[in-house]
Length: 260
Image (cartoon, rainbow, N blue to C red; front, side, top):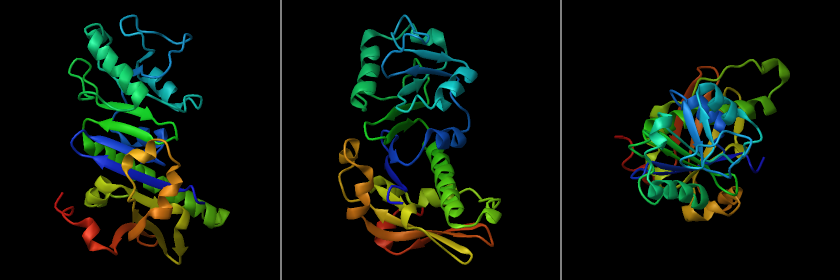
């Protein structure tokens, strides 16, 4: 499938990740703890609770947060988490306007991590379905990516193998390998599951660099990235030993990453 790709761009300074193919389900499975409270930065829903100070919809408590995140009608999720409802009351009008800008322009004016809110994430969905997520702790993103790559491989395996082998359990993609690909992600990397191969006891997923400006992904079709990308390696999964491996085809693309 041409659209079966995972794209990742990572900006270390602002702790920003821009991705395509990483779902909210992957996010929920990868983070250590789900947020306990959310402010929605999207259009206000009059049927949901509205915070009178900021004018945003808010979801209080882990049960409400989980219900919001898993609701299929909330496809274009835009939210910021916060620690305590009382913290919203001390936001200044300027800070509220910054949050409005985040939800409208999909980018930050100042740091997206607010001392008053004690937020760990800002989660935005771009017009083309790509996700722009800020992580206070980038180690959380590596775990989310690991869940995503594992689930994509499991899906490919189910498509290509018979029903009798659907019970195979994949080991999660190692975050250590994800960290070794930091330079790739800092420039934009594509994991092309649509061109993956399963031969014998080995599954292979091509890894490509994406040369286009990251800002083009905001509006353009993400799957077009493959057409201009260059293969630099492969992810391999050995079905018999249940181990992941990174095969490097272009060492220069991985320079200065192995010490991270």
